[in-house]
Each structure stands twice: as structure tokens, then as C-alpha cells.
Length: 552
Image 1 (tube, helix red, strand yellow):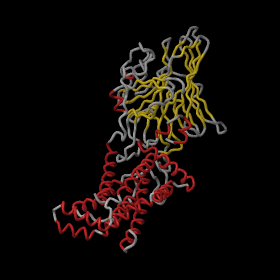
Image 2: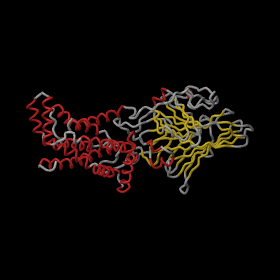
Image 3: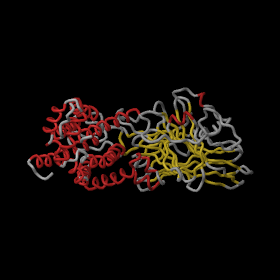
């Protein structure tokens, strides 16, 4: 196989990668979910599960079942409590004390001047995504997320001089058990502390467990290109199995039921996530459920605690609600930064992201950071690329003689190949000399592709002139056209294929790539334009030197 065929193979493989992303559910192996008993994290092993319940194990008798609500209002509504911090605008519902709406104030929905903030959590269809929590108890009334809390005020705001803001809600059972559900927000952080403080005034022991869950529908993120596949669904992390995806279709097939200590659970979309991180030394039962209206639930429930009369306990959980900022997520929980999903090439992609971020801190522009990272990568592979381009240049120089052999032997492939090998041996040319350098570089370039695709830092990041959003396609298709032009120039520098059909296929590739890249984020296309331009420069210099009789 000569260099031209190798290039064709690599190019077609990349096209297949782009096509594959459009419909594939994931690029990694399917997560193996253990056999489940069908019970989603029960409070007691003897307690039967109620099918369709939106809380683990059973809906309490005092709560209306979800089927009694109209489709347009799948969540029971109480009073909304509005909370505003430096990063969030939130709505907490007194029904259950759920987080119903979360707007990210630092992340506009679009690039327009009057754009509203991006809404990550939302309590209405079709894009429903909420955080729910509560307590299950075998002793008396249960403070699940169906009960009504009360709050001293309906609006909270973080003072300018304060570093934290607490939002308490309270509930008291007929038996005398009081629960204070408290959210604590921290300035400059997307991590939120959630506590359920139990005060037992019932006169007898109280026993209960805390559950926390994320409920959402499967709706694509606003502005997401259908040509770009990124994972949306559930994720769990354990010290033993590390990062595991629990896809929506797996939730439909089988409920998850697993005990994990020191892990976390989350629901992901392209640039943002909601995650729940329990206490590290306490085992949790992780569960999933599917509900009506194509809703999916992933959650966890703690071991039971017994609280004696006239005493109390506090269940604590940390939440992360916001963008996939790797540095902050590393501080919140081990492995949480893996939600920036680079797949099997994480070991290469993370150093590339560090390099990209470091250069951005210097130049202050993500577009120029991409350009400089591409230059650095090309310099790192300069010698390997030089070997490949020398091989191509020598093959190009031999093209007339190869064409003469083809005309001499016609359709006799055996004699033609034998004559070509003799010619290569005589001229001391290795037709496979350019293969290894190209193959070695492919994983690095694919890793950089995932870095540019997954990094929330590039979302709505401007470059220059007409490029105002590196994560969106070029509105005037200038970068894709430049990319197609650079591919065409590269082909002119490569040795022409002897096979006329192969030659026609190679000529079509720039057109195919141009069409595909017209729908790709500008940051990705910029990388390919710069990479191709540098390759053309290096290849042109080497080709001219060899054609003039220079060093082979």
C-alpha cells in the first residue's frame, strides 16, 4: 500500500468518524449494569417497590401519585422561593424543597447582547431537569419531596460582603419530628451544600434514610449541532469501577441497584451537569428509574440512621450544578472532572487541554490559543512529518516512471507490482516510509479534536472578525471553505494515484470535508485550517528540495 492509499484510508476513516458521531449512542463500550431485583434503592429490603413512583421504593400514602397531575405539570407546585447569588438565580419549590430552576448568570444562552442566562435546571416540559431529595422513614410520616416545607421568606440574595448564603426550609410531622432542609451557596463556586437536619421531638426513636435524585428528559442542549455527538445521560463514579455511563436506554431496560462507597452520581449534557456527591465514608444504594413522559431518574439513598428521642442528626450531600470546569470539579470530588469526556484518549487529551488553557492565560484569546497549540504540536512532530513528506515527494518524483510501467504492463497486476518493487529497490525508496509517522500522529490529533469539542471554555468564546463563538459553526462558511482549499492544495502536492478511480475519489474528498465542516464548531475548523496550512508549508519545501535533486 503506497502513501496515497494510506492518506485515502486515513481521510475516509475520519469521515466515517464524523458520520458515526451523528447517530452513535456512545464511542465507548456499553456500561454493564449489574442484575437488579427491580427494587430501586429500598428503605427496607422487605418494602416493595411501587412501579412508576418518582421516589425510591414507594409513594407515601399522604402524597398524590404523579399520574394525577396533568402532562403539562408533572411536578406538584407549591410556593417558589427565589435565590440569587453571584453565579446562580434559582427557584426552590416549597413542595419537597426541590431545586426546580437554575439559571447560570455567567453563561448566556446565546451571543446576543440581551440574551438571558443559560437555564440548566428547568421544571417544565419538554426540557425537564430537576434535583429532588427527601427522607424515607419506617417510623411515622415521611418528609419526601412531596411534602410541603415552609420558609421564613420567599426571596434570598447573597450580600456583597458575604461568602456564603444559607436558605433553610422547615417541616414538622404530626409525631413531633422536625426537619430543616438547608441549602448553602458559596461565592464563586458551583458547589452547593445540602443538609437535612433531623430533630426528633416525637418521644420515641426515629429511623430514616436520605435520598437524592436527578430527574430529567432527553432533550438536546440548545444550539447543539446534529452533526456533533456528545453524551447526554446518567453517570456514576466508584473507586473500583471509576467513571461509568448509565445511558437512558439502559435505564429503560433495567433499574440500576448498586451499593457504592466514596462515589457520586450525575446527569450530563454537552457543557453542563448536575451532580450529587454523598459523604465519602458512607455506603449508598445507587438506583435508576424511568417515569412517564420519557423521564429518567438517577439517585442514591443512604443507610438508615436511628435518632433517639430529644436528639438529632444531619444528613449531608454536596451538589455541583453548572459548567464542566475541570479545576473546580477536581476540588469537589475525585473523578468529577472526567465528566469532561475525552473517551479512551483522556491520557492524551488532558495534557493538551492544560497546554491550551496555559496559552490562553497568556494570550487571552481561545482562537489564538488553538492556533499556537496547533503550531506546537506540528513542531513536536516535525521530524516524523518530514519523513512522511520525503517519502511522498520521492513517490511524486517517481510518478512518470510508475505511469510508464502501468502503461507497459496494463492489467497484469502481478508483473506491474513486481516491476514497481524493483524500481523502488533500485532507487532506494520505501513506499511505506510515510505510513508510521502519520499513524503515530493520529491519536494526538483526535485527542485535540475531543478537547476542542468538550471544553466549555470555548462556548461563546470570540476569536476575531466574524467569528464570535468558537463553539458554533462559521456563519459565513469562510473557515470550512479555507479548510477545503487547503485539502485540495495538499492533494496537489501528493503523488497522483495510478488508479483513475482512486484519483477521482481523492479529488472528491475536499468537497466532502468542506460540507461536513460547514456544520462543525469554528474552533475545530480553525484547528484543521492551521494544521493543513502548516503541513502544506512543510510539504512544499521538502517536495521542491527533492525535485531539485536535494537530499532524499
